[in-house]
Every structure is written in structure tokens, then in C-alpha cells.
Length: 84
Image (tube, one colour):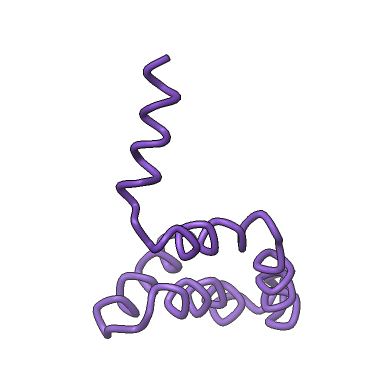
């Protein structure tokens, strides 16, 4: 089952699907292959939406966007704390 999901993910990437869409579609592959798979499409989609609806996860891109998108600035800050 894992190999089928991985192959579907690679296929979607080769077909130039965005990474998020490729991950979402490849996670539905087990339900297509095996009808006795316990998670149906509604459960899979609901779990994805609940996983994305998290404030700490949303804070990461907003932090980089608020700092002007400069990753070097964030890395300098991390290195400053690591050197001490």
C-alpha cells in the first residue's frame, strides 16, 4: 500500500501537480485500491483540514512573511543563539 502511495505521489509530481495536491491525491490511493480500507474519502479530507487548521503551523509562514521573507535574517538569529 505504501509503495502505491509513493508511486502515485511521484507520478503526480512528474505530471507537474503542486506538492500539496499531489500529497492529497496520493493519500486517497489506498481507498481506491482496497475497498476494505477503513478510511473513506470524507475521513481523509476531514483529517487534512483539521491538520491544517492549526495556529502554530500557520504562524511559521506568517513569521517569514512579516520579516520581509528574508530567510537569512532568521538563520542569523538562530546562529546567534546556537553560538552562545
